[in-house]
Image (cartoon, rainbow, N blue to C red):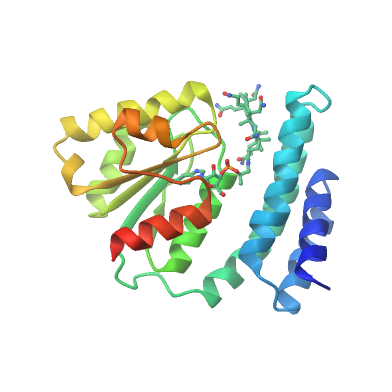
Length: 216
Ligand code: HCB
């Protein structure tokens, strides 16, 4: 089975809320030595974005999104240990990377994918979850002596917390010790520039490319 066929199956499994189908395509992809990161990005992710579009058009409702997200997670959960195995191991010296979905935001699928890919690239990733209070993110950065911090915001109402977070880091006197990375569907390069974030990442591949370049 080609990569394109696997990606199509992954997309269709998410769009059909089919957790078993998502698991099956994940297993088939592993067995056939396919590009697992591509399966996530060009397969599962395309499916969940399509579900989001139909939700926007009021053709689908929240339970549909929840079921599609559950199907996607079932597939990604199978892929994660394999992706981590074939990548570099963590602690390769690229430094501590705290990542989370920002206060007020429970969306976690994209952030978790970025966390996995950064780990594979050799960062020591500390994924502290979703809807994480700003003060707790600061604490995690200090506790882990992080060099990098990534925040994910999927809603216009929570994007503003990325700005408040930049201000909090300054207040705490640790802004200069960290490289901040921002992402999430409504987040743009313009937004990153306007709040003073160091790096904007459109997707996981972009995050890995930009952050590994910075890490040298
Ligand atoms: Co949700 N939701 N949702 N949702 N949801 C969105 C985000 C809307 C755009 C849908 C819509 O209305 N069109 C919308 C936000 C509107 C807005 O503010 N502009 C929305 C809403 C309103 C809500 C609720 C408020 C709905 C409700 O309860 N009435 C509620 C949120 C409550 C809250 O957070 N306090 C809600 C809930 C849910 C779930 C639980 C059903 C589910 C999330 C499950 C989970 O994450 N565990 C969900 C989902 C799945 C979506 C959509 C359909 C898909 C999001 C997703 O997973 N995309 C989304 C529609 C959309 O985004 N078009 C919809 C796929 C991932 C792979 O993409 O963009 O998240 P990504 O991540 C990329 C990229 O951005 C970047 O890399 C990732 C990988 O390539 N990236 C980073 C992300 N984070 C990064 C961090 C970095 O440092 C670097 C790069």
